Image (cartoon, rainbow, N blue to C red; front, top):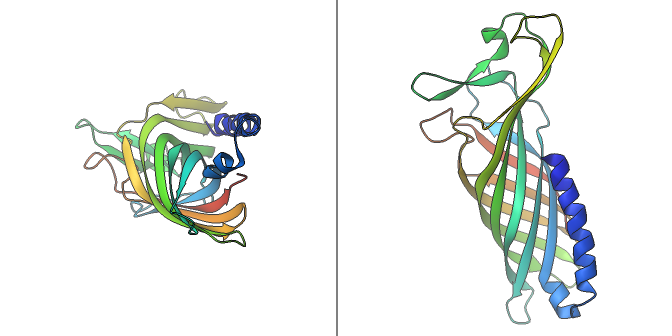
Length: 227
């Protein structure tokens, strides 16, 4: 999904450049594309569950800007895609009651070593924000976004715990059980010209309420706004 988002971003930039040649300067200034490259920090992890220092993710969005008169303030709304990764030392295991739990790999399969283990999840987002943009290109924005789950999967690479061979195992399973289908949270951005610092504080867990551990992601990274 990360590669797909990168391709979408490049194609969108090229398409917008072609489109911008056909519209007025005032219309171009009302539309902005945003690429966020970030790491997710996961809070409230169950005891014994650890994550990587960097859990890389990516957002891509396009927003239309409504300026408040001739002031430096505006309101923007649009659509986007957000891809997140949860690298950990655990599998999400579902019990007989349909509730997911994070269990350490080495507890489930003693002696198992691995190179990669993650849960990936992607949302279709509707972001909106209030913006400040000064004459010297200082930018700041606070907002909110709500998203619908469009993809989830796990990816593992390491010792063969399935067939207990000496070969290295690489597997991918789609549709992770109990991943939250509707997420929402607060966004913020501050910077100068096209480079900004960004943050997203999720108000929902990774897993559905009462269907999994209450683990909250906080995204921190860099926003690129070429338009």
